[in-house]
Amino acid sequence: MIGKVIKYMRQTNNISQDKLSLKTNIGRTTISDYEREKTDINFENIERIANICGYEIVFKNKTTKEEFRAKDIERKI
Image 1 (tube, rainbow, N blue to C red):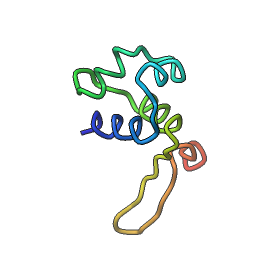
Image 2: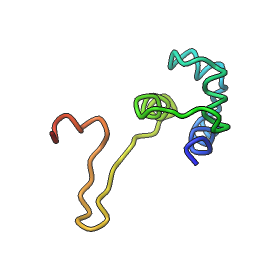
Image 3: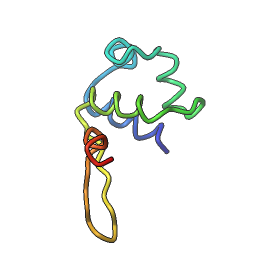
């Protein structure tokens, strides 16, 4: 599932795998493997790709409706 999300974020912003590779310092074949779900991806790389593609990761508690962003996690702890 995360591979499809990564591909969607990249394609909706007209960013090639090569360009994303250069901007994130993640190998192009690794990005391809992430998108095809051939390789597991860590959260740091998900966040890096999301930021480059103009997305922000937001966590929302379904019960309390509390929201926080991944970048704010250090302030929550």
